[in-house]
Image 1 (cartoon, rainbow, N blue to C red):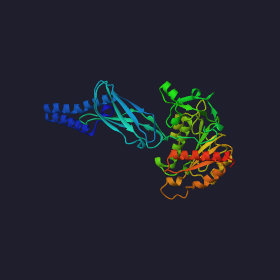
Image 2 (image 1 turned 120 degrees about the horizontal axis):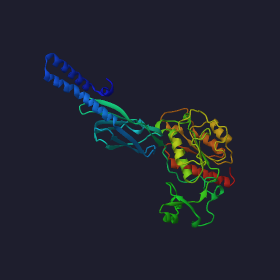
Image 3 (image 1 turned 60 degrees about the vertical axis):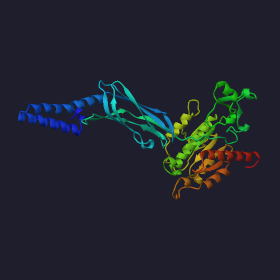
Image 4 (image 1 turned 30 degrees about the vertical axis):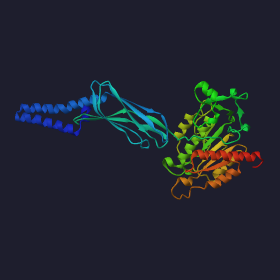
Length: 421
């Protein structure tokens, strides 16, 4: 059966067949009362299917997600606005929205009655466990009648994109030395004179040192402001993320790959929020986040690029030049062999400031894995080449890893200042 009759259920078809059989018997037995009953039985499923089909045509839905960018482990609220534009009231609606398993179960709603030219708002929340560009939808409706004689399926709303960005950990402090804004040797004062009146300020951001709060500007603007005392070296800082699948262990949100992406996001945003020019590149030197028109990354640009980042199938680190392009370099590395370390050392000028976070990927797997390399050997090679390095493990918080890197950098800077190499 086509058209409105295509939605007739088995119960409706049985009722229709019973009515036709009763009509046939009424002619054979010449029973007019039976004919009246048969007409009613035949008309009932036909009328119900017609009305349900009209209700199906008169449905409209909109989906809204707040916020559109949600970090891993965060929460986003999805609202569905459903209203009827038909001439008849709608009832018996079963709505089901398509939600990926990484965001939770598929929500279902039952609407007993939807008034004509009026609507309702439905809400549910999603809690993403994996970063990426997720798609919610489509929203499907199943229209039924109280008698269970008809059932229509319809797609009410298409697909809406939700960007699940990496988890960002607030960091405090900067590695000492040129370009990191931690000393006079690599920065330029923004203020022309000395004293509080010449201070350049900006709005307070989470993670800022409270000792830098500029109380006079805070009182004047009725908003917490902090001093911007130094400008980073004009060359900026390059954050290198090793996202080779071969270099990481584990799976899902607890894998070393996800830890590295989260660390790269935290470091990049920490530098950006402290006024640094930041380049985010992969282990082969190719940019991960495209530069904006002014050549400077923004928070959203970095997070969106990392949200969509997939693991590389390249086994070794192979670069054709300095990945930092002469800038300061902060490298977040998975398992690296001596050949990969040699690639980084060979093209990296010794005079350029280089820092590395080496991940002990053996700690991210529960079984013995002979392919997981000992990071101590790589750290020794990098240290002897003038790098500042730390080894990261999953049980050490990210902010502590960053603090250890800052201390290692300051110690190396002190050694150079005293004439040691």
